[in-house]
Image (cartoon, rainbow, N blue to C red; front, top):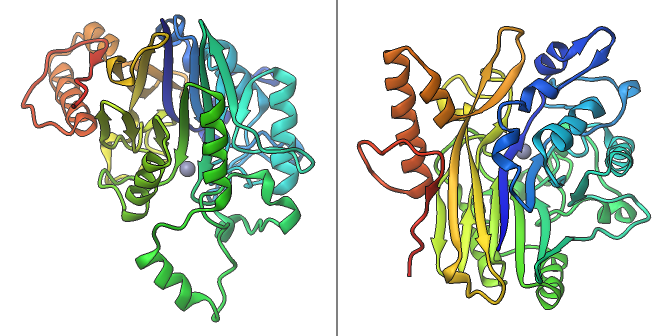
Length: 372
Ligand SMILES: [Zn+2]
């Protein structure tokens, strides 16, 4: 049997980079020290790295919506958290332009952290293939766009291979296309690039299970937008077995049927509480880790699927930390705090499982009932 684990957005705000700078160097180890143990038995552990690692000469910022983070963060993601693969097709991958995207790939190669979704200009954008105990898994990563409106980084035709995008990259806003943009926003559906259909088809012939890291959705909103509902539907029809959704920064519901698992958003696995999250939404500090257990020659409906709930906190040194909510509740001595955390645990459970329990038993890992 193999165990696959997936977490959502791994963010690194400037507050974190400042808190991690000590004695002339960056050290992010403490961010993941509480959760390392939870993923040690995962055979493949995947998360969304939502920042370029473009280099200090291009400046470390996260404002306004432009990220760049020291490579030490990715090292901690790999060595402390234990992530095996990061999805890099997301709306921040061009925050430092083509140079930033290429530098990111070069340092990921250097530190030997696997990635999928972006590539160097002279490379082919390839899925990640993993094999263990005779089970072959293929992972793709695609994004709805690259924030071109904010970072002004428009890919030339010769650079389009560098980021996997569901449709075309966003176009510059002009008075000529503002009306067509509006129409597209209201009615766009059923249009994805040919590449993705070919990618999925090709991968299906090579592997037992196709996984898509989908970067899409309305941010800080537990209601799923029409565009993302449509993308999920298309991916399901194209034969993807598991969709791992990221980008909304809050947990959204999942689909758990016998032949298909689709999660719209696992939430922020790592972020600085109160920074990237909307003040309207107190649930952005919570996230889901999804675990899928597979056996050779197993029918997809016989698989075991579980999940755990995580929360990010700020420690005494102004550094963020991800903690298993179960651990946090068990060690918390304050009755009122425990009551609030238990209520949030139930809320996140209900959102993810689309259920309506008034209370649920506290568990480290919840098993999901697969629908017929
Ligand atoms: Zn995003």
